[in-house]
Amino acid sequence: MPLGAFDFAVDPECDPPAAPVFWNAADAPAIVNQIASAHQFGDKVSSIRTLPVVARATDSEFIWLKLDNGAQLVARSFADDADFGVVVPFDDAWAVHLAAADRLYRHLRGLPVEHPLTRQRRQRLKHALRTVDAVHQGATYRMIAVTFYGEPRVSDEPWKTNALKSQIARLAAYGRRMIDKGYRRLLQGKHR
Image 1 (cartoon, rainbow, N blue to C red):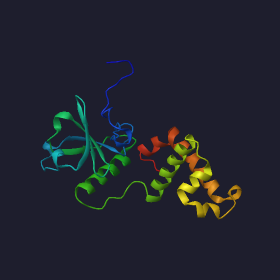
Image 2 (spheres, helix red, strand yellow):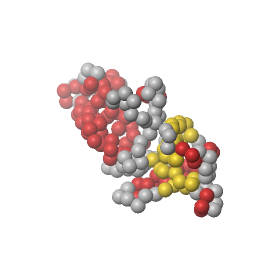
Image 3 (cartoon, one colour):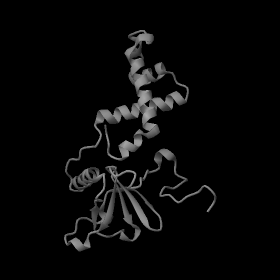
Image 4 (cartoon, rainbow, N blue to C red):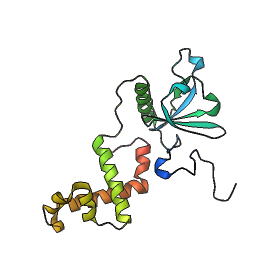
């Protein structure tokens, strides 16, 4: 293996925006659910082969599955056609694991599933990260505000005292915090 290289469950030839992102269960208890064989529990819960999988990756020991609702599952590679149950570790993220397992269960049963982040939080997070990217590319706060809100709304007030200028500055600060360490809180199921 060349220096600096490591095994990972993503094809390095895949275009980054198109590559499925798989997280380690220890880093993202809100996203990743571990799968164990459920044969010993009697009732068949579901088969891995019947899951609505949109992305899959494997290594010698594990398979990573990404479902159409964004849930991610990790299983032993030999369990591809096994019935499964979700393993919920007794750790500090117990409530997060349970909520993720409940979302998976509801999804598989065709029941409504609430996203762990509200639509407004997801939109704010997208705008914050796009703001940071734009600033790194040389865009001004005014240019970013025009992109998000349109020229007429930005031109309603003088830019120097425009409320949107402050809003873009707050988005930039929030985006930087999320990039630095905040994303870890999201992965851990801490949404505040």
